Length: 144
Image (cartoon, rainbow, N blue to C red; front, side, top):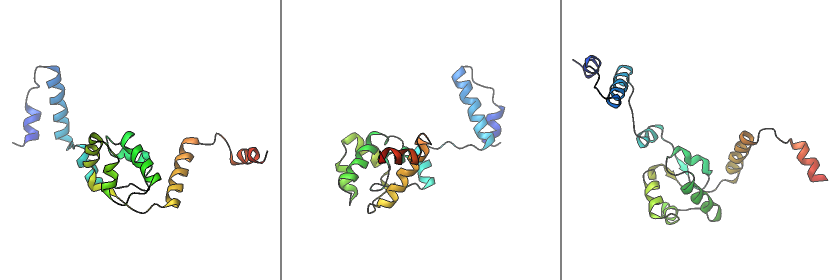
């Protein structure tokens, strides 16, 4: 018999934790659900992070990097754009380097693109700021 059938036919273990685990494993086996670690999920989605053009929030796709590591990298790129991964790692302490190292294959380094950065920040503001103040109001305040 297959593993799924065996799991469904076994009586649940006595403890409540084991019972919940058994129920979850049974559900996972029946539904075909596969549980993958974060790193494997990231690898399957093929995300990349361009350290010279990324906003700190983009690092949220990589658990353990936001906000501390992300902020250091973004601020470092603003001061002096990176030309190598070695420069990125030099900016971080040992613990932060280890966190970043697990995502090393997703790091790309391109030249800073001001238009792209402006677009990204305008989209963030559009989402977060909403319509609290209109452009016409702001323009009137500037003229005054």
